[in-house]
Each structure stands twice: as C-alpha cells, then as structure tokens.
Image (tube, rainbow over all chains, first blue to last red; front, side):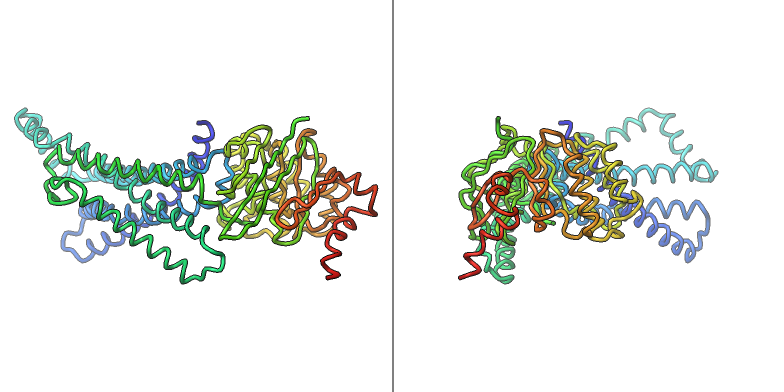
Length: 276
Length: 235
C-alpha cells in the first residue's frame, strides 16, 4: 500500500500538469471569446464580461474534459509500457491500476478547478456589481422569506438522480480509460505472439480486427441487455431513478470485468518497452 | 551459502522466436559477475526477465527466495534508459522520482555519486550527452541500496578516462552482500573487478566460471571469451 500511494502521488503530479495545462488553455480561450463578445455587444460592462466568462467556462467544460480524457489516455498507455515506470516495486497490474486511478483523480481535479473558478467569478461579480448583488439578494431574500419557495426549490431537485448522474459520470470516464487500455494491451499481446517477420500490414490488420471485435462485443452486450435499459430504448428518460441505477450496475460490471482483464493482460503478457 | 539469484529452466520466446532456451543460473551474494555474449545473445532479455520487464516466459526466477514480481523489483536495481521522462525533465526531478518510488534510494549516496560524475542537478535530460546520461543512470542505480544490480551495457558512451574511474569505484558503491550482474563489451576493462563470468551462447548459459579459474588457465578473461568464438571464425 505504501508503494501504491507513493507511485500514485508521483503519477498524479504528472497528470495534474495536464490538468493545469488544459484548464489554462480553457481559461485563455474563454477570456478571448468573452472579450470579443463584449467588444461587439452593446452591453459593455465588467459584470457583462464576467457573466460571459462564467457562461463560457460552463459551456466549454465538456470540451476541455473530453480533450483531457484523450490526452491522458495516450499518457496512460505510454506509462503502462514504460520501463522507467514499470520498474517501480509493484506488480504490473497494480501499476496499471495506479496509473488509471491517478488520471481519473486528476480528471476530477479539472472538474473541481472549473467549479471553483466559476464560484470565484460569481463572488467577484457579487463584490463589484451592485446590480448583481441586488439581484442575488432579492432572489435569496425572496426564498428565505417564504419557506414554500425553499421547499419547492429543494423538492424540484431529484437528489438521488443527481448522485446517480455523478456516479455515472465517474463510471463512464473509467470505462473510456479501460476500453483504450484493453485495446492497447490485447493488441500488444497478440503482436508479441505473431512471427517477427510479420509486416506492418499484418500488425495493422490485427489492430483493425481488434477494433472490429471490441465494437462487435459492445453491440452484443447491448443486445443481451433487457429491453428497458438505457442502452436500448429509453435514452432520455433520465428521471427514472431505477433505470439509472440499472445503468450504473451495467457500467460497474463493464468496468470491473474489463478492468480485471486488463490487469491479467498486463500482469501476464504486456511487456515494458525496451529503452536502453 | 543460499543463492541471491536463481534462474531455473527459463525459456523465453517472442514473436515465435526462441531467445532464451532452458537457462539455469545461480548467483551468490556479494559477487561481481560479467554477463558476456554476442549481440542478440539474449543478455538484455535475461536481465529484463529477471527484473520483471519481460513477460510470458517458462521457468522460474527468484531473488533472495522471492519469486513475486513486486518483491523481485524491490530487491534489484536495473539500469534504465530514463525514457519515461520528457527531455525537458531536470536531473533533480528525476532524483525526486527515484526518491519517491524506491524506498531504498539514498539521496546522500546519490549526491556523492553526482559529484563524482560531475553532473549538474539543474541540467535537463535533453542537455546531456550520451556519456553524461549513462553517468546519471549509473549514479541513480547505485544510489539504491539493492541486493542485485543489473547493469546492461552501462559504459557504451562514456569516455575511456571516466569509464576507468567509474569501473574502479564500483566496488566501493555497493554493499558487501550485493551482487552485480554486468553486461559489457569492454571485457578487458571490467576484468579486474570480476568474481565470475557467465557466457550466453546458443540461447543458453554456455559457461559459468569463476574469474580466478579462467585466469589460471588463460592469459586473460578477454582471451578466454574470444576463444569461445574462435571455432566459429575458422569455419
């Protein structure tokens, strides 16, 4: 466990650099767009600029997170086969778990940075703009004066569904990392068994066949699942807590099964890249 | 005395090609052992199998009785090419990585070795010549208090003078009970250090002799080693 934590902190340090990098790019992009938006708009004020920044941070967060997933997937696979990292005194399977987990935690960190930056901007807007302060105070004052409004506001939120959606977000991100590693590990294991004379064409063909196989497997899983799951017919019926719970179980099973296969593959077959 | 390293009936295949076939090797603690063989004889592969970097082999490998990959890795220090770091990584960041990952990494030892190798901790990996990088790798490897050191052609890019100094000092950097397995083409230069010689030939351990025994029957270890290939050259 000591080694696991030590490696985790080292990996997280590396992954958080990507988090900061993407967050800075996102922030810079948002600032530039907001500037042009205010410049062209008739509503030229600091509060308008800040509101535009907040809206754009929220709007671009999905793109930033998707880019993060792509970059860290590539980083993960590089580390999974790096002799430098694989020499850490742990089994290859544990190094893989540490690697995936650190990417995921740094991913959550990006999410937290986005939330904090929005909250700070709201705080800044509140402190500098009387108009904004008035709007907030009026809104909250209204709520606190009448308990019915508070009750209505709270009861309109389905907290179970909010929690389930958060867990779904976690399991989906993990599923992405796990699928990329499964493709990489299975391809690597098969290529190592092929004759050394195999051409690039054969290696490419193996990769293509594996992509096809993974797609076929996912389709088969979807067909085996009962009709009333989100995978098949009820996409968009997000209010159903039970159906969301079922979806979570399906993703959990996917993550556990394919995660375990990956641990087995990296422990038994996937070699560190020779780098001397 | 119990063996520090025990390789038993090891066979390793990759891409349908047998690279190591029925290798048996036992090394005792406190020895400095040369691993000799032609290019492609399987020296690096054997070290990679011992260190858990190469997979899917038959047979068993144990270090101080431990067969598990994690335990083996904790007991050995393997010269690594440092390719897991980007070129912009500074030496001091690499040291921090080693300190965090390896519990047996001794920063004071590294500092002494760094000064010996004349390396600036502020230098980036991209600024290091091949020789300087090899010096850094040697310093990082010996800063660990390992039971088994695996040195895979560690001196290739180091100039003759520095190489001589490093080779003469190696014995001072290791614990008395630690064993060094070193593969190198400069047989003559490391010859004075050696306790044993292992020759890999025809995919297996062709010979495993004590250095004293070789010296008693041949002019030098290099002559003995070259003699193993004379018949092939004649053909």
